[in-house]
Image (cartoon, rainbow, N blue to C red; front, side, top):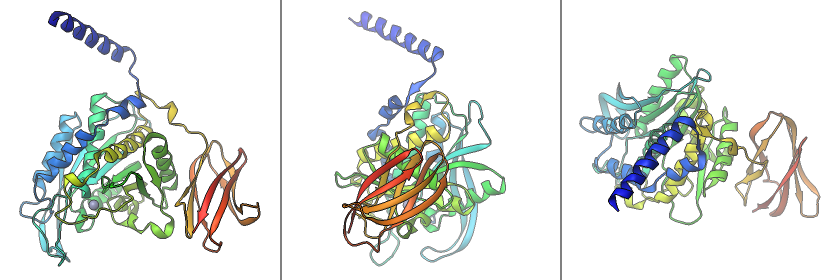
Length: 409
Ligand SMILES: [Zn+2]
């Protein structure tokens, strides 16, 4: 029995190795299936077990950064702790004059498509306060933001597991001092801008694991220089995950400024910022612990990130043909009270018009979007002037039209 088993193991192992040598492609669904909720949970626990990740504590976050860099190195992704100095007087933490610790890992491309790179990042520091705003020394920061770091490390694990090869460098980043005012990302984005680097997309995940209900949604905060990216991100969520994407309208997008991706936007880089749609009830408290997270939801957030990474970093060894989706029209939010985001995709460039009609076909609103290129887009429509009720929102293009039913509150 043992001998037969050993034979089969040897045989199947050599067959697998041969297949990899001859046919170095892997289907995206296979990669998705390898994203693991327990793996994500272990990273969150490891980070929580530091006890305190407050950036201004004695010794700072050097030990945390070394842990994250060690994880990347173990996945064959050369990583360093990028140390920088800051001093000042913080409104919460008081005077400081010390070192901060980012992590930077780089997966080199197998063949370079162009001079741009793809970056996935999350902040490694945490903060906790009591109701009187006094700082606490236990900062588990499980959702904020061990969850985001866990997604970043899960991407590294999947890349390593399948020996994925890309045609753009993939930079894996963890930031220190986010809670003090985006210290780590401001530092990194400035250095990159100064060096003339080009970034195809910066994927930021900050608070992506609190999900107490069955109604899974992910908010995608956007930046005005990267509207096509958020539109594509929403499509990818719909196609590859059980999470419904949520694109805030411009008057609900202020939180785009409150995480690391904003530092990149300020330097002219393109980014998208994913955050749980139901905001954690343990935000910045010592109750933000690993047991409060939903790891199945987090695994789907990781799937969204993986599909984005494969697409924007041009994974050479992954068959990604099935990423292309049929033209669809989505409306966020729905029901809507005033402004609504319509997300759509064009197979080729076209003039785009939006018509909102009532159920009898009467046109209530007509908006011209002008000529739009092939790819993902979204249009903002203000329904504030319409009476409450049900409407049909129709997107008209040269290739045809698509309609979505919208409820105005
Ligand atoms: Zn955060």
